[in-house]
Amino acid sequence: MVRFAKVTKSYGTLTVLDQLDLDIASGEMVTVIGPSGSGKTTVLRMLMTLEKINGGVIYVEGEPMTHMEKGGQLVAANSAHLRRVRSKIGMCFQHFNLFPHMTALENCMEGSVQVPGISKPEARARAETLLEQVGMADKRSHRPAQLSGGQQQRVAIARTLAMRPKVMLFDEVTSEVIGEVTNVIRTLTAEHALTMLMVTHQMGFAKDSSGRIRLFYKGKIEEQGSPKELFENPQKPRTQQFLSAVREAI
Image (tube, rainbow, N blue to C red; front, side, top):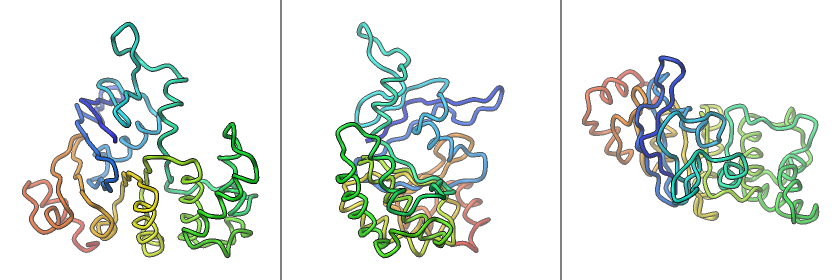
């Protein structure tokens, strides 16, 4: 579903992603962990087209996102191509970014009412269903300031799903919301046939929610495996060192 092929991202002389090869299968739940500055969040920003890559190609559902075919060759994608492929991806940001003046229901409706061909009643019905699925139907009339952090994240998840993405990205699920959203994420993955890529520094969340974990180090994948493999039998010294440093969070 998602593929990074020799992707490089640099800021001046600082290389953040170094010839990164990354594959995520359809329906997979992948979590990226690693020390600060290892390139974890940069991967999400590349997929959200918030940053441009310096080299390589990113594919989504087998189609180049960062490039497009022209005259039998791959050239840099134009804005229309980027928007079209990017529409397959949704993201829940670390700070949720809910509109403070809107209710939970209005927040969930806002994106889909802007999509051509979707009427306001249809957008409302979609939002109502999704709020029910994330356990927030009884809070539909509440504004963000009236909700806890976990409740706000549930609304943010529902809002993102209202756009019908095929890939969901999560940036730094925090300890205060883990208990509320872990089961929600698992359920939604099955019900909506979603592919998920999550970045977190919460090792308990990574263990409980992932099908596969990738440990990043200096813009590359240092080690990967199932939660059991990575946490109980890490093979690489850097993985062992990192997990030892955060063992109190596991």
